Length: 307
Length: 63
Picture 1 (cartoon, rainbow over the protein chains, first blue to last red):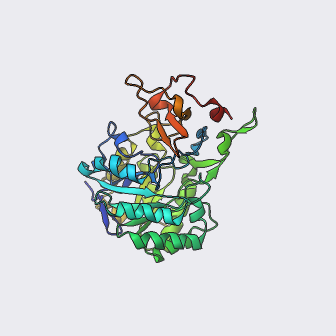
Picture 2 (picture 1 turned 135 degrees about the horizontal axis):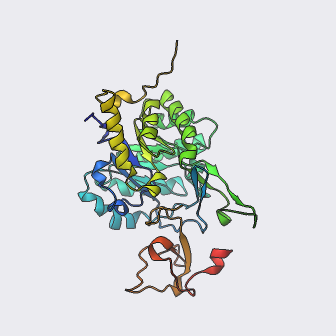
Picture 3 (picture 1 turned 90 degrees about the vertical axis):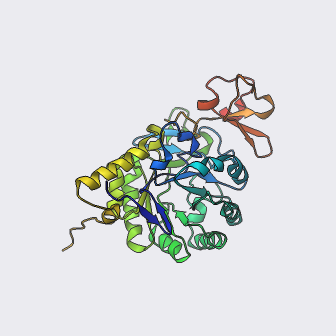
């Protein structure tokens, strides 16, 4: 058994595998399928200040190699989350990372300050990248000044490990990762979904109805994600959490070799709800087979064939 | 395809808040009312697939 523990800033996690926000509900939904204690961490759906109903139907459609979705941050709101969803994690032996979001910087900071008071929450992941809302989300993550305000404000109200989730919808991801590090983030996670579109040609309407566009996820985005993760790891010293179309241990290993300290599995949870645990086991088998004693020795071990 | 067990939130159906049919036999656990109580959303995978046709907000759904 290889050493699988990795550190996300000051937080140690049992193994480098966690679900991606928005694909794991509030955690409890997966109880019939897996033991959360076998994951590095659980990442719950993005929480906002007030409850949100999200976007109107149709919210999702399949596309080649992927899934196009426009949910719009439907969630129960931070007060209900604390009261009804958080107690589940009190007896669960795993790290809990809560994804937070909102329409304004003030809202995100408020949610962070509420969660700051709860020891059950081990870390915060700021969703600066949701592609399906008009305000906040990706609008924060596409502008360096806005991103700077966001990270600084949230850092100011929380002492918990802080992860910034980045959007690929920028010309160059590197300045955003560097800025997060400079402003005190403990890690960055990427990528959130790039924006995509699909049209039903008979009624000449979007497959996502009046939402028109959605976030593209699934294996279709994996090469894009892998490249951006590799780029980000080259320019920051804080851990990078790789996300994007991971379906199996082999996919996860690609991200680790590229330099990601940990990985998140998103859309595949909908296809195989037990996939995260299978991926953690698969990474361990790979390390054992190759005589690598710790996953940290694998991280960033890409052979670039440099002269 | 969506997940089928209430996490991807893809299969949301708008219901008329005042007309929601909800009782012991039809608890609709995934029903959510918010934003001033005017809008209610239900998940087909948890609450459906059968609905009372009078509770569905057809205008919102099909517009």
